[in-house]
Image 1 (cartoon, helix red, strand yellow):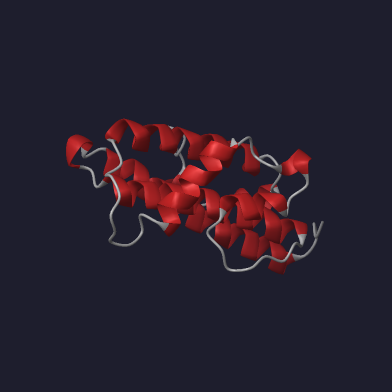
Image 2 (cartoon, helix red, strand yellow):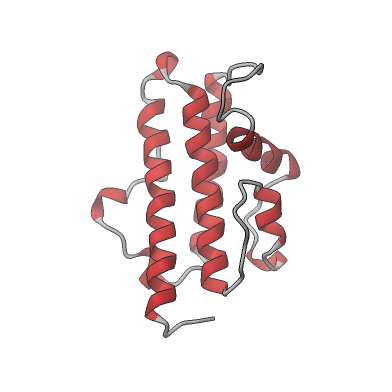
Length: 149
């Protein structure tokens, strides 16, 4: 990889910070319980996963297009680096960014589904972080504790 390239580490760190901000927003919003806007929660959950995948792609030196499709981003990574996301989870996450992002004729996301999706994002986050350089994970204290909701 680009272990000694400070620019690659800095860009990777920026993707990580953006991903963690999305996760933090989802966690805090879910604390509203039944009043939580679950479509918004799920959008931020998808964004967390997408941005972590993009952080890993940047670190690996893999170019990617502007996309919200989780499966497409995963296909750019070697199997050994892909987080464990089932095809159903990939599709669900992509739907949160592509379909639910805008007004339309779709069912609201149940609160229990939003909570389950949060666990999926936390799992993917943990798995991706194992493959990123420590220097890109040195983030401010305010981002710690993102594995609990």
